[in-house]
Each structure stands twice: as structure tokens, then as C-alpha cells.
Length: 356
Ligand SMILES: [Zn+2]
Ligand SMILES: [Zn+2]
Image (cartoon, rainbow, N blue to C red; front, side, top):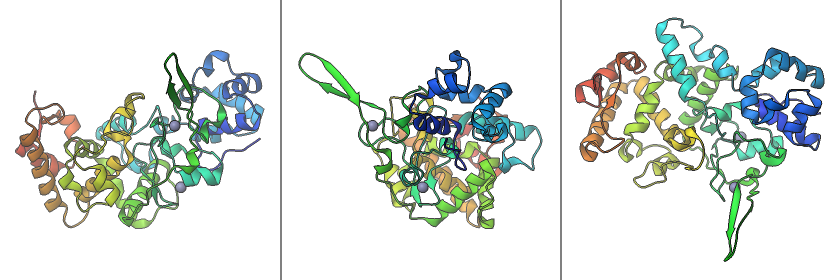
């Protein structure tokens, strides 16, 4: 039986064991692990709701310790302290944490690195389900978000055959005169072309973010400065809302072109809630995180902040009160999740407001 690889997600490991046993994951869970059938409608929901007793049953059947299984669950980001915020304990901390838990997790799909997937033969990392995971720091490429053939995101909530970890399970429709038929897309997910990350700062920020979520010991000392982004988690969302091409001219070429006027806004329009937003798009998130990093660190952060505020204001003026471009209403407890000086500048310029 395959043992979990370091960093693997619980649902990926369930699929790996099912592949190995030549059965469907829900059969494995019921027949071999003796979990109740009602618990297997969706593997993601099983992951979210696993009880201590169920973890013990899986341990008894597989020999994998309950603590190890627990650390592989998406719930670890919501049940356990985040290393990025480990030193902080106050009211503000609770607000930041609940924002991060609300907005940072891709609950209904996962990104992936095709090169990692090839090396591991279909094992998926838990960190790919964080919206702030945009790059693989081993292979120095941006993560993939959707299948290039059918444009579907991967690792959906619904259960399915275990080989969906290697081949896209999306449907392709074939229209004929009399009948509409579909077949599985089956694009090999290990062969999806990946885009290299050319800006080393993006890789160092990603390492810092990985550390912030998982406490990985491999983080470089300098990269810890990106942890300031966790103190102001609303900043990246605000940048996504007010982003304009001018903010990304000198960014990594892939990021600059994803932010061009008329570029595809979202990698997918067909799946659940997180897939609809810009936050589901790895290149848009990478650009917003990179800009956010410049606004909270470094010598020129004041000049960078002024420039951002002017461009955001310019977007409001240009688009008037069109949906998505109106000033952002932020009550005071949310404004705390922005850098204080920037928050003042945005208020002064009318980009954010504190009353309706
Ligand atoms: Zn990789
Ligand atoms: Zn596909």
C-alpha cells in the first residue's frame, strides 16, 4: 500500500491507495476502512469532517498514524495555528485568521505542478489548495489551474475514479445531428505545458508563504519578510479588485500579460464559488501578492503605495460606478487588515470608505 508522500493531501493519498487497490475511493473507504457509507458522497467533505474515531479506524486499516493523517487534511489550515501568525495573539489576530481561512483556501478545486505530478506519479500536495500557492519553487514554474483542453479545474468535490489524479476527468461533448454525447477529456495532467517563473523574488515570496502555512524548515532567512503579507491579508484582495495593466508593466512577463486589458479574467467559469474569482487565477494572485509585497516591505514602499493609490483612484474615475469599480466599503475592523498608512491614503483618496 502506498504511504503518504511529504506534503501530500489526504484526498490525494486516498486516491493513490484506491488506484493501488484497483477500486473506487468510496469503495475503499467503506469496505477496507469501515467508514459509514453516508460519509463517502464526496472525498472533500470526508476530509473536512473526519472524526478522531474515523482517523483511528483508518490507522488500524493502513498503519498510518492519526497525527500524520490529520496533518494532511485541508482542515489543518482552519483547526491548527498558522506558523505565519504564531507569535501574535489578540483580537486583531482572530480577525486576520478568520479572513485567511475564509479567503485563502480553494475548497472546490486544486492547482498543480505538472512536473511534480510526473515525478510523484499523481500525488497532489495539500499546499496546492491554498489560493496563495501560485508557483512550484522546486521546478520554478507557475502552477496550473485548469485543463488546457476542456478548461475545467481539477480535484473537484465529487468522488470519481482514482486515476483522475493523472488524467483530466472533465467531459468533452460531441454534437451530432441527433444526439449530444460526451466522453472523458482524459488530457494527461502531467503533460500540461507550464510557464517558467523568471522573477526570483516571486520564488522567494512563495517560499515564505509556504513557510507561513506549513512551517517548512527550508525557508530562506530573507524570505520571512513576506510574512508581513499575512498581517494584512486584505491587501491582496484589494489589489485584485483595483488592479489595472499599469500596475504590472515591470512584473514577470506572464503576470503582465495576464493583467492586460481583455485578458481572460478567470481560469474557469464553470465550477464552484472560489473558481469564479480572480483569486482562483494563479497569475493574477501572483501579481497581486508581488505588488502587495512591495507595498509592505522595502525602502520604496511609500512611493509604491502612492502610485498604487493613484492608479486605483484612476480606475474608479475611468469606470465610474460600474460594478466592481466602485469605492470599497470597509468597516474599521476590516481596515485593520490593511497596512495603516496605506489604509489612510486610500481613505483620503476615496478609494475605500467607512460608511455606506
Ligand atoms: Zn513542481
Ligand atoms: Zn480536460
